[in-house]
Image 1: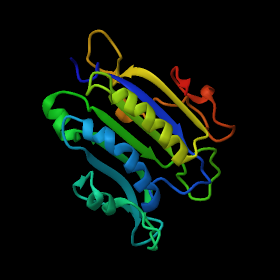
Image 2: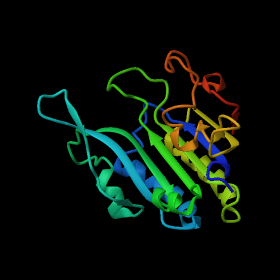
Image 3: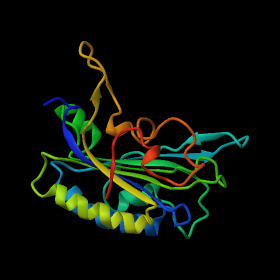
Image 4: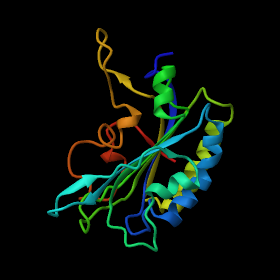
Length: 220
């Protein structure tokens, strides 16, 4: 099976922007408790990548933070989550989880069993947003038996934690082939947090609805 042809049950949850951010220590602990059963069903260990910016000399210049390897465990989570007890001035952009790790998936030429992204929709602090964060959960339909049922229960629980203002799902491949001659793929699940999920144009001028999505999704 092609890396990009592997099919997924894919969930997107748009959170309540007034709620505590998903990347804070307390909130992320609730999220990991929900996701742990899925990660345990993956064919190999998960790995996390987080993109964050730190204020640098000559502010407002910022520079990316290097966290090194981040495992899916309490020690790994502490590397990047924002502690409520600390004066954290890092700007959170996103966190991405591949299970197994992305390097393993590339080496085995097989897309992940479980994929998760949480992205900060509030790029500029203080700007008005109608939803935050953007949370994506995808599980391979051909992975461990029962993983889809577990994922649905996980998505339901995550929706409550994030105070979802809209939650949708669909079955789709990891990526869509753009042409018959060249092996070019678009709207890849691993890129949806940046491109391919929403229609072009401003997202925060009206309440979230199915109308803002690029492809066909259903509310769950």
